[in-house]
Length: 376
Image (cartoon, rainbow, N blue to C red; front, side, top):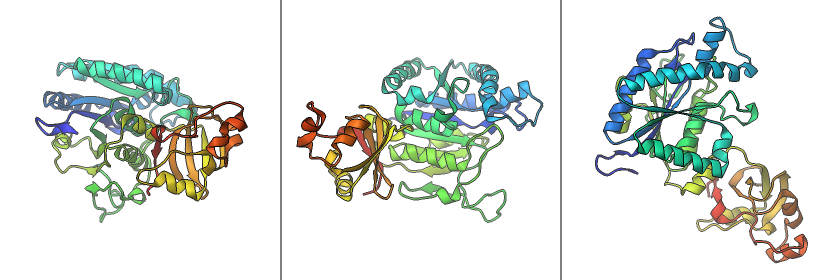
């Protein structure tokens, strides 16, 4: 939903890639950061709130500690980020100060997003900051993040912020590439820029490769993150951050980069479920349950349709629902633990109290606590 007064997004999350913030040797690109600060000022003056998700801490820290060109081991990234993060924030603070904007550093772990209570508290904080005219500058808290539960890279972090933490109308992913091409433009002269991607269009075959030594992303992860956002109703633009006036052009809906169109807007709670990256278990269902879940007026998941329970989860944990072929159908919050679900699977709901020895709700996953992720 755009602002009616000027047809611009009310709020945009702008992800800035590593190779925009630092050069190949980890030196800060002051000119870019200052230029982007000016674009953020113009966007805010035009009525769009801006949240920045920035990369670059690892690259800056790597240069401070090691000789240029040394590759970091996976276990060294948190330490390099701890060294680089204060400098990264200083660069953004100084640049934003030149255009009379105040930044706020926000460092997140995935637990801050997937825990519903913490996510809501974080949302309140960001709403306060934006209401005060402050620019939140977000990065992953790499120094304390556990490798197995990190966001993976800041493209996914930005998508989760835009969807679940500070719901936005637009996600802008800025890198050193103009957008998504039909082939690698550095290797193929006939590569063409894809301007628009429909919500149901599969373009994953065009995305391959990762970024530089400090970047964990690449176009494939950008497209994956973009799909998380568009599936929840948020338009995404992937564009070249080095292009003059790029943010203003994106906000004005000019033809720039690759635009991934969004599906209809998803309610906030279901959007949070959709971007949740850490399901605790899996419920495998039969074809009848699959059809019922995929109906337009879809039903809740009842124990009678469950044929297998995988993983260990407690009541209230997120689980995925898959068919017998292994395809994900939905995800939602379980009303029963894994052991309880195992005991009642395949049973009629009227038998739950008898099997468990206590009363219980009819649904293993209620429709209100579920988001369907498969196509009907």
